[in-house]
Amino acid sequence: MIFLKTYFYVEHELKFLKYNLIESFPHIEKFIVCEFNRTHTGMPREFIGKEKVLESLPPELRHKILYLPLDLEGLAVEAYNREDLIHQINEPIMRSLFMKHIELNDDDIVVSVDADEIIYGDSYGIIKEKLLTSDVCSLNLHQFFYKENYLWSNKDFIAPTAAKYSFFKHKFPCNLRYEGQTLPGKMGCHFSWCMTVDEMLYKLDTYSHPKYRFCSDRELLENAIERKEYPFDRSQKFEIVEIPHNSEILPKSMRS
Image (cartoon, rainbow, N blue to C red; front, side, top):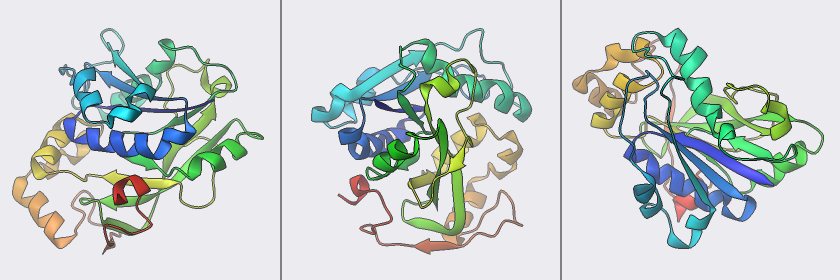
């Protein structure tokens, strides 16, 4: 069986859950959606909750959702200014705590993505075929930035991982990222920072990279979007191509 697994922490990510569910629906047993009572920085947050998650999804597809509200008390650490602790402790716990709450078989496949990483429906067959002879593989995605049709044309995003449960079941906590041989071709799309400026400001205060909080300025962010600039690292080559909203590069669930 194949399971798609993700976690989210803001309401604007619900649309990406919908896209992933539609794309994956014919190919998966369940879509495991995790939510936590703390942010990446370890600070407390309120659950958005199962009701709002389900309301954002097509009614006829909701039965494949397995929503897990997970308590990080005593597991995550408060690390508002400690990026090292976020990456070493909080993120691995958040990406793997689901396996403490469900039962899986050794041969079950888990495709592990963050909320804004959409896997093409056609990719599941390729992943399944690869894992007939391997235990784990990584997935290369098209990188989008700021807007859902702003393609970062010179960028590969290789982070999501697909693995047999036997590969990671004794490795808690683990990140389920950057593991195994990368499959050839693009397996989907990553919609990084595709949000409003208000949402960007919230993200900068709560996510895994405190070093980028110097970008917490509304005017700076508005100008970066308009000028297609990358303020986080001026040395980074950043080539944005605007593609049509019906481009075949985009997941089918978004084009419709």
